[in-house]
Length: 212
Image (cartoon, rainbow, N blue to C red; front, top):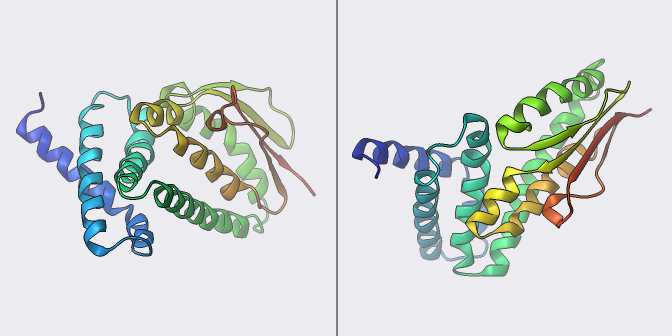
C-alpha cells in the first residue's frame, strides 16, 4: 500500500510527465471533441498513475525509459483506444515520428560541424552500454570496435517487455522507428537496421558507420 505522501508524489510526477506529452493532446484536437479529449486525458492520467504505482521499485536505468517514454505512451494510447482504436495508433505514430524527425534534423545540422561525425560515432559505445545496456533493462551483443563504425544487437528490450505487459505491444515498433527518423538521414553517416524485436524478430540489429 502506498502512503499518502507517496501518492502525492506520484500524482505530481504523473502530472509533470503528462504535461511534457501535450503534443499528443494537440494532435487529438484534430480528431476528437474537446470534451472527449478531457475524458481521454483524465483516463491517461489515471492509467499512468497506476503504472507508476505498480513499478516503484524499478532500477534507475530502467525507469529512465519507463517513466519518460514507455508508460506515458502506453497510458495515452490506451486511453485514446477507448474512443477510436485506429485514430489512437495514427496519432501515436504521427506525433512520435514528428518529434524524432525534428531531432534528426538537428543532428543533421550538427553533422556539418568539423569532427562531429567522428565524435558522434565514437560516443555510441559508451552511451549504448550505459543507457541501453543491462542496467537499463536491455540485453545486448556488442561487437568488437572497428574503425569508422559501431555495431550492436539488442536481444532483450524493456520497451517490448513493458508495452506487452501494459497490453499494447503494437507501440513497440513505433519506438523502433524513432531510430530511423532520428538517425536515418544524417549526412556522412549511415544507419542500418534489418530487423527489430518490435516487428517480431529475435533481435534488433544496429549499425552506424561513417560514409563519404
